[in-house]
Image (cartoon, rainbow, N blue to C red; front, side, top):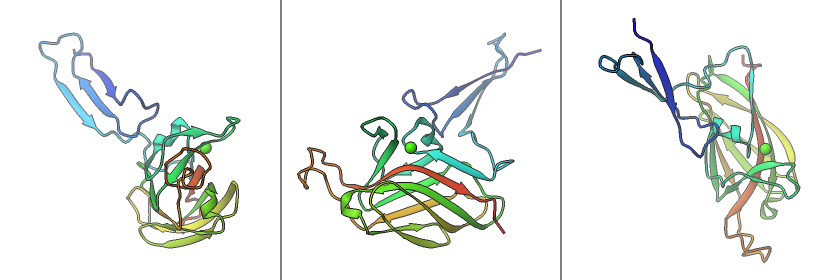
Length: 195
Ligand SMILES: [Ca+2]
């Protein structure tokens, strides 16, 4: 009787990567007969079950839960109390990995963001595959909740468009040459009220 063993491959720099490959050895006691099976990427987070909402601390290790593009690296506020990421340039995308909704419908998306000064009182547009909504950005950190429609059996994806961005260097603030748009602290997808 063989004794199966499995191990998991993921990038060394990531605490909680979304893309994990599972490697299974059919018999760890007798390598002359063992077979090696590679499966991946495994669905680490599974489908929605008992919980009806997923919250992610953007800027913390768990934000690997999201597939993020158009964002800079994780950073913290000067006093360390807020971990966040800067959205850079005119557009970013946020995908909740492995969260196929059981049926198409609407979900509430709540996020805490703070605009770079050039985006204060500007409009931020948020699109899902099926709908579009907009918020006007207040100065400083604020929570916003919008409702969007999502297709079923597809990882919920958001496209976010910013009216403006600028480099702190161009404004004489510091030497930072990133095109900063909006800081993101957290995002929650709540599909409890799906019709
Ligand atoms: Ca955060």
